[in-house]
Length: 91
Image: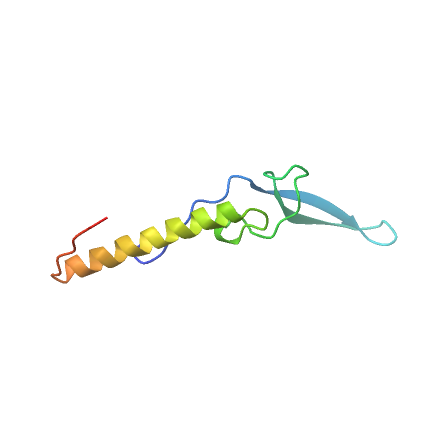
C-alpha cells in the first residue's frame, strides 16, 4: 500500500493474560497486558509492539525513526522521478 509506513512489530513485545476475580470470587475477567521481554523483569509496557513508542529503550525508538524517515525520503524521490524530475544522490 503506497504512502503507508508499516514498521515490523517489536520482537520483545508480548501479551500476558491476567485473571481478575470479583470481590467475592464468583466471577473472573481475563485481561491481556503488554509486556516487554527485552527487560530483565519482563516489565509491563504500552507500546503495543510499535518500536516508535518503545517505553524503555531510546535506541529502539531512534532506529525506528531512522527507518521511517528513510522510507519517507525514498517515497519522495519516487514521486519526484515519477513527475519528471531527476534526483541525484550526493551521499
